[in-house]
Amino acid sequence: MNGPLIERYEALVRERGLHPDDSQREAVKKLQALLDALKKGRAPAAPLPRVLSAFFWQEERPRGLYLWGGVGRGKTMLMNLFFDMAPVEKKRRAHFHAFMADVHDRLHRARKAASAGVADPVTQAARQIAAETRLLCFDEFAVTDIADASILARLFATLFTEGVVVVATSNVEPSRLYEGGRNRDLFLPFIALLQQHMDVMHLAGPVDYRARQDCIGEVFFTPADENAHAALDALFFALTGVRSGAPATIEVKRRTVFIPQTSGRVARFRFADVCGRPLAAGDYLALARRFDAIIVDDAPILAPEQRNEARRFIMLVDVLYEARALLALSAAAEPEHLYHAPHGAEAREFQRAVSRLTEMRARSYLESCAVADALAPLLTD
Image 1 (spheres, rainbow, N blue to C red):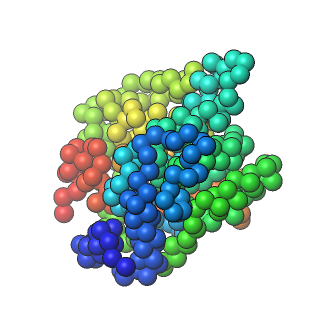
Image 2: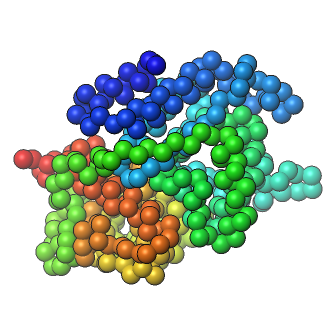
Image 3: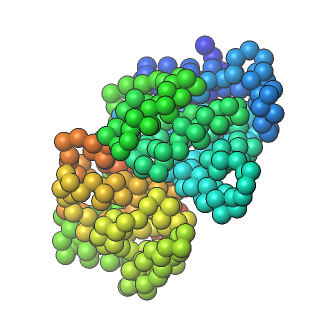
């Protein structure tokens, strides 16, 4: 099987010196087949009336793809290749946290405007999204919030009915989504819905490609002692030209997020300030929009029961990684030793944070982030 996506993937293997990976190649074939189906079907720019939508596709409506596997196996790289080449005018690529934050914003507006005869807000939000987006690509599909879990089946039932095609990456197979969550039995119809409308493929390659990168370490300091604190002081000065910043706040949905130090587009927190307080994905997304670099002091080794702190740290890393922002921090240990728990979603997802933290201190990432020019002295050999 040949096609432009397959050719582009093989070119990347050669250019980047990637290890030959049969699992990735099978995933690329699946994605190429979906590209071909989308091109053949030519999904309309806006949804058809529901009485006609089931008959739109000439043959069978294209099925989406749920691509799951361990951290650093190339899932995001493959999805990005697919998204760039997808022949769909109205397409959207989003981190799942960001997508759900947008959904809850829409629900809030719909509920404020609700009156007799108005459609269910979840259905209404899904139809709005379907009118704007015919192809949805999600990175790091994970469900940890009961507020998300409670609406996903209704939301995606409408999206699929309206003809939206979904491609997603995740660290876990669909059957383990929201594992251990409250009222999980009410979430199970959503898992069945995914399996009905999406092919599920395990990317089982043995290599964590992020761990192979040239890690230079000048933005991650351990242990979190006086030397690490001084190094972060120096980094803050290099990025801002001042020794310390001024306190500031940002407003997120009528909540105030306090930032101990800011200067320009650089913010500095203690770990307790940014992960020890009850912040949500929307707060971290707001920080990523406001700042190009975030410095965090004194990340501790988290105890197994500190699931909330671990979850917030995972969200912070995910959001900054997606934004290509700089994250510099001092920590009590290397990333892989910061959190261990015998079970639970946080324990599994923390491995993604470990892998991404490794990449975020690598030369290739630092050279591509928004503050690369200010970091140039650190990147000299």
